[in-house]
Length: 297
Ligand code: UDP
Ligand code: MN
Image (cartoon, rainbow, N blue to C red; front, top):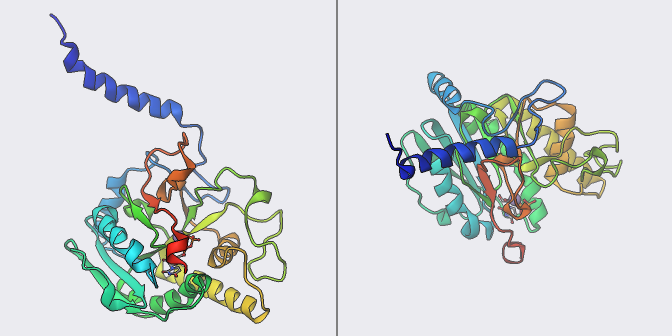
């Protein structure tokens, strides 16, 4: 019996890319020294997490700030892509914090999903907009957001979803490995080093460098996280100093003191300009091009 080569080509191709992907991925760390999972593509079954989230009838909050020019530049793509990939099939409540509620684009939302717009003041410096998020989030978590959501994810707006970002990411306290720094030695990580800052870590401290563009967890855990960061930022301000990477420095200090219970691989917040990396199989969120000249003036 003859085998039609055209019929087996797709089979071969699928198997070949599958095998290649496994070969190509070097060993990655899948668990921290304190026992928290680090999730990478293919280290979890998304359907198990989806079923469990639905069984518990969870509501997941997604907060995003779009202040000043960040609104026109990024918000629509962020929301449209979130509708396609973020917690599909779950109850979702978006919280969009902006200085121009009337300019928030209308995005068609799926069943069980709603969007709330919350007005915020526009701080003059972009650093202050970024840092002010901690106090605003703290207040929201202590109010309506905290009452209606079980878990909340707090994201930067200058990125968009490119793959499923589902309930596999849920845990009490979730941190994102920073795409640029995940293979760096500890002493080189860009933590705040000035001892006068509340965010300071010494050269021997720190586990990983976490990215402030993505963090999440239960409402109770996030209340602690945002209180810690807002207080640290205020203390620094009173001393006339500002941590190197603003809220991100304080977030890294918090995660050093209170270990996250789940870590997301850089696939969950990937920067394409880094180029091909064998560890990265399936980016879920991608940094939008940084157009600082446009958005930060
Ligand atoms: N942001 C904003 N308007 C600003 C500055 C910041 O809306 O003028 C928000 C926005 O959600 C942004 C986040 O704060 O994604 C963090 O700022 P940015 O992304 O510029 O910081 P980076 O990721 O470059 O450190
Ligand atoms: Mn950003």
